[in-house]
Length: 401
Image (cartoon, rainbow, N blue to C red; front, side, top):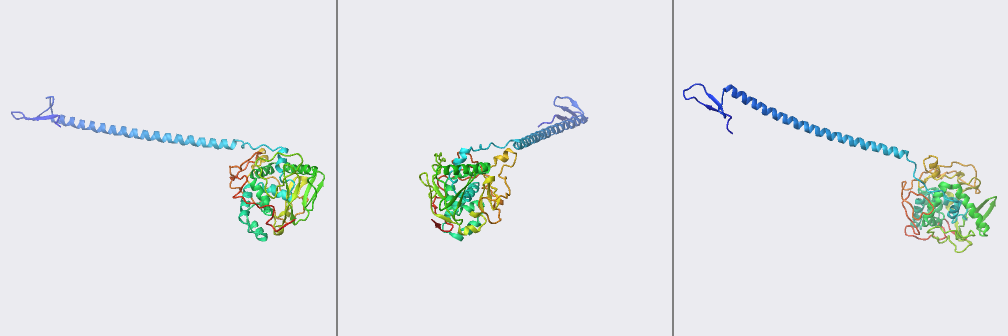
C-alpha cells in the first residue's frame, strides 16, 4: 500500500516539502495530525461496531430470556387453572342404581343358601380381585386338607369373608368363573345393601310360594313375619342347595348374561337338591369362620362378630357418599348391637383391615351388564387360571350326606 503523502527534496536545498497525492503541499505537523486523526477515526469506528455488536447480543439475550419467562408463566398459569378446574369439577358420573327386578335377578343364584353363607358371599363380592386370587391359590394347593388348609388360609391377607369362602371351594370357584356377576353383586351391596337384602327376602318368598323352599334334613327354613331364615340343621355341617336360579322361583327369570352353571351348584329343572355337606371342622376355630356371620334382618344389616360388617374394599365407589359430597368409598356402618338369627362367638372384627385392590385400577371385569364399576384389572369369564373343578365336595373336613 502506498503512502498518502510523498517526500520531495528541493533541488537547491531547503526545507523538505511533503505533498499529498493530489500534489498539495502540507506541513509535516499537519501530516502527522491528519494520520493521527485517521487512526482515531478508525479506532472509534471499530469501537462503535463492537459496541453495536454487544448491544445486539445483549438485546437478543434479553428477548430470549423474556420469551422463556413468558412461556414459563403461561404454563404455570395453565397448571394452576387445571388444578382449580379439577378440584371444582363434579365427580364422574356413576352407574345408575339397580331396580328391584335387577337386584332380584342378581341375588337369585345365592338367595336360597344358608344365611351365614349369603353374608359371606355378599361381603366377599366387594373384593373381586381377592376372589380370583383365592380361587387360584386353592387350585394350586389341592393337597392341603383340614387343619393344614385352615392354617394356611388364615395366613393370607384376604378379607375375612374371602377366607371364609375357602371352606366352600365350589362357591369360591363359581364366583371366580362368573366374575362379572360377582362384581355387580359387590357393587350393589356397597351402594344398595338394604335393597339387596330386600331382594333376597323377595326371592325366598317366591321360591317358598312355588313349593321349592321348605325345611329338609339338611337345613331349617323358618318364617318370622315377612322374614324367611335358612339355617343348617347341624351347625357343624353345611349343605349348599343345588338349583337352577332361573327356574326355581316359579316364573322364569332372565338368565344373567354369560352365566356359567358351575358343576356341583347347578341342578337342571325347577327343584332343589343337596349334595355333599361341608364339615366346618378346623375352620370353625378361626374368627372368620362360618359361625361368625349372619344377618340382623329386622334392620337389614349384615353382621360379623356381633357388629355390622363394613367392607373396606377400594374396588367400588360408594355413590351414596358421592351424592353427599363424601370421599366416595364404602365407609357407612359401624357397630350394631342387635344379634342376627344365629348366635355369634368371638370378638374379632375382621373388617377393620383396609384392602387395596391392586391400586384403584381403572380397568373393569368383562361382561358387565348391570353396572358394577370396578377398579381391578382382571378379566375372567368361564375359566380362571387354567380352570379346574372343585365340584360339590369340600376341602374343609370331609363330606356328609
